[in-house]
Length: 431
Image (cartoon, rainbow, N blue to C red; front, top):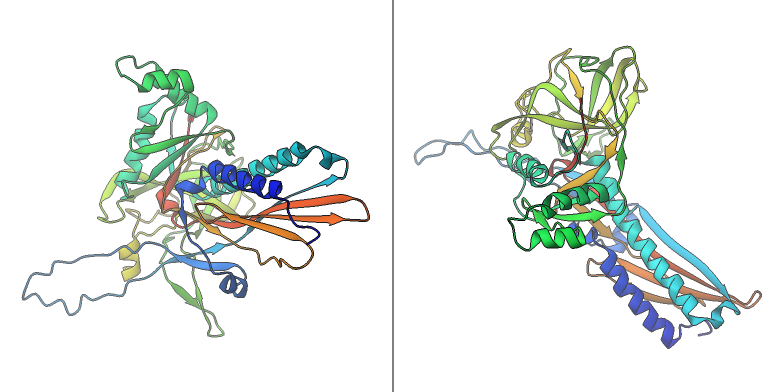
């Protein structure tokens, strides 16, 4: 074939693929679901992924009649989309190709950028949709900060394994500084001082990010945002039936909430908040943690986020079991429904880096695959990482310009299946 790869280019691609795999730090710490290409094409690249069941129990001693206690389990699911198509194209003319290292350097750059795209996509989804919010009044200081994330996870019944924490460089180095000063310990203080390395802390594997999402500060005074209307609780359901009769799946990660803002008050997408007298529950035991449940604003559907009545979409939904349905009892996550006029307290009072923590099953990456013909005059090489993410390299020579075109592609999706199993930690939050 006129455009076939040389042996040197094939070896170079193998080296690129190896480096690409090594650079995918974040994707190695989330779950992976491999999709079927034909099925995804027929469903517009959307697949519904199940959330964990939560069971309820009763007292059922022998000779006890439990015939009226059998209930339906409601299977919740979330839509996952193959929505990221990342490409690095570059071209080399016949003069530039005299330097074979030039091609290799461009390949390394492409590998680095595509791996970064995947890591950033995972962090963007986690930063935008995670709902467990930990705020600290000072800068990153060490063990106590991570221990707070551990406590929040434990109190709400998140599994005690495969926990990860991705910190901005300044936050990570702040924790390393604290560790480096602990001269009563052996080993870890030395590596913390020499390499700014933290490692595992309070059950979390920690990672340093060379980038970090940011959250804006919201200084709206406490009391200037209130609940507008009573009985704003959510009833989970697996499906909904349209007026025309067809049944569709329901995404139970979100709920609309009516609020009222006083003059000068604002809310923004991404804001974190708590509600008066609404505590978080342990998801399994349903015990009251004594700690306020935290929420995020996902979108603003009316009111513009300024003074007056507003409707916002929040996550997670307020499942107080006030309606008493089986689904509500199974997925109950708060101690009470917020009262009409009760206070909404903003937590992100100062702008800050978003440090993300999660349990592995909360976040999921979906590798995709292109169906690229291999007999259409363009040579194609494929490789797959340990997580199943495909890297494709194509080559085409244009005789009219003596330019050789290359492109490297990857195709994937990211979903936060369970926002109540992932959170964000914000430092320097001083009310």
